[in-house]
Amino acid sequence: MSEYINNQTKRKEALKRVIRRLHEGQTVEEVKEEFAALLHDVGATEIAEIEQALIAEGLPEAEVKRLCDVHVAVFRESLEAQAKPETIPGHPVYTFLAENGATGRVLDELEAALGASEWEQARACLRELREYERHYLREENILFPYLEKHNFVGPSSVMWAIHDDVRAGWKTLEALLADAPDEDRVAEVFEPLATAIREMFYKEENILFPTALEKLSEEEWMAIRDQEAEVGYCYLEPGHQWPPGTTLEGASPPVEERSVTGDLLHLDTGALTAGEVNRLLTHLPIDVTYVDAEDTVRYFSQGRERIFPRSPAIIGRKVQQCHPPASVHRVQRILDDFRAGRRDEAEFWIQIQGKFIHIRYFAVRDEQGEYQGTLEVSQDVTGIRALEGERRLLDEGE
Image 1 (cartoon, rainbow, N blue to C red):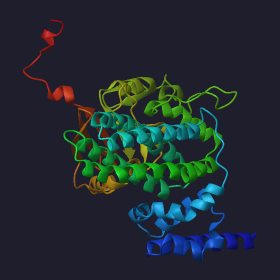
Image 2 (spheres, rainbow, N blue to C red):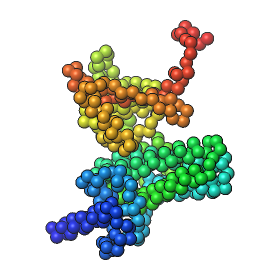
Image 3 (cartoon, one colour):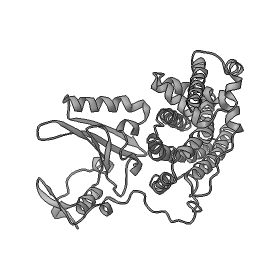
Image 4 (cartoon, rainbow, N blue to C red):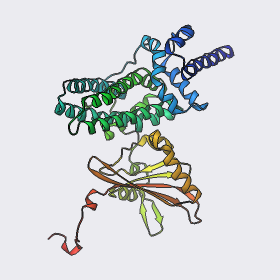
């Protein structure tokens, strides 16, 4: 057994050297020629683990992301020689794969419309392509948290960063198509965008999903399946053949069902049952998320209309892993300031799909002023900003 472990350790160190050589400037062909014997049977999980190990050893995530396609190019032959994961309709991986197929067709239609300078058709195709956002959101907010519980962190962070690059490309292309498009500029933006989307198909299908299928239990897949609908799907609805012989039941039952609703919680200004607290929070016209003193997500409200996607998978997740890699340092700075007592509030506002969203972070402190966590409050204030004059309670119903 010790010999096997030593051999596996040596193999991983050798594979790390392969990737380090790429980052030092060697070409794909040079590396493949030198390490041919080693590369012929590399698996998806092994690649993901190696990238994660390199990040843990100090290789910046941004650098791993920059050469992510090169890594795949080196290992492509080995990956394609492996059997594809078998899935059936209803399984989350089956749905992800079906969405990739549909998205590829939309991308082809957009490419054809741009090539023919059919701008109106291109705008319609781009709007349709952006529905693929739900695919990324399900990965980021449901699949990635479950993988993180199995110490699969680095590769998912790299993938999230690439998702953000794709999102930025969508926005840039949308702006270019808004008025009188410049064909050369449109092509300059679209070509790398299309390549990034298609390469992500490959990374998902040959690395992310095989790794997830190996690491996650059937119970975890069922929990993922149960949470998907809230985020939504693109272009299709999942089948119901999986899980066979069972009915889907919530892996995370509502808080009220888990609570002893008859016991009163004595608060500063009254007493409520756990069920009443849950109903109160879900009826607030705002989204509330609570992160404890250890930066762990402990709670989020489930209102009727969520502003940002949330799923039960994020409970127990570090808040830093709930944000795109490009913005994590800003979130960390706010938390550090709260913890050090330098400030008690941070405020932002953004515009999304015609809505004006107000976001505030509040430091939560105990009676002695010690930091206990952070409360995030998000609200759609579009209607509030449009109010004028006054409307008194006596005017209600007139």
